[in-house]
Image (tube, rainbow, N blue to C red; front, side, top):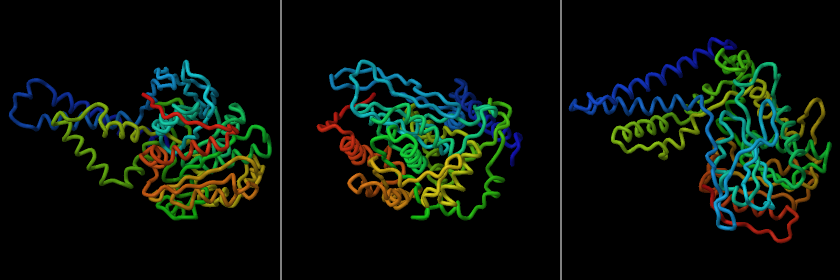
Length: 422
């Protein structure tokens, strides 16, 4: 499978389907066909509209679309997205709120590199922005990174987090969502030994696979069934000629998307069928619920092959974080070295990706951390998405996380504003 031909064939198929959709939409939208007493052409146009949009989103990077935030003074403050640290495989970006006094809480969100862009955490950012000075890791699409930039695996990812934390300084609170939770824990332990003064004040791990063997899911079962050789043969391809990363070995975003959608195929089929009917009736909107969700869900990015394969091998198969046996550049990272960074884990009771038990395992590894600096929360009824972006996050988890930040910020009088972003 390691051929540019297979990558380019996928892109050709995507591009062709986008073209079919655009053609059908145009054909069904001619004024002349409106005179035909049949709903056929309206259905053709609706199918084309939904199809074109869906296949176009697969190669588009979503915008943040966070324009303003209401401050404590009651005024709208403009928000701009600025790069604080620039690296070949990912940047640290800052949501700068103009004209607002310096916030007491500085938060670094660690976004997952698991097929979607960091904008998957858009609602998480929007909910934190009124109360915090927010930074986030913005990982780049591997297809756009020239081969000359070298490799990027989980050790490089960990060192990126170390550099970002050194840049922000010690008065930082880290929130790691899903996939990066074990590597955020490793980066903190790395700093504990190398540069303790640069450690964050607190670390919140949300739905991450610290110990994948603690609770089985479809993800962990797949990791056990498939050998590394099979995995490499099945999913790794070379970027085709269309992109700057031509020749780079990647796990293509469109293959990842096919895997995501196959897990809930019936639900996705029903969602698109209903959207076509709504479009035919004139009830669909450019930013309706369906389009808001799928504009983000369908926007996928390629991962470097070495990052994907080392994640499966070292985190899931060999359990290096769970066994406290992870190393970076040949140097063992001892999680027990964390002695004064408060750590909180958050899990969803109905999480079918990182099941309850996988994330809270981090607390058992922190043998050098006093119990009063450890905390955990299990959210009843919440699935994977809900614990960082859904109703459970908004109503229950977010206030708990902010309270945890305040309790470990050194501020004797914590206060939280309840504001809104636009």
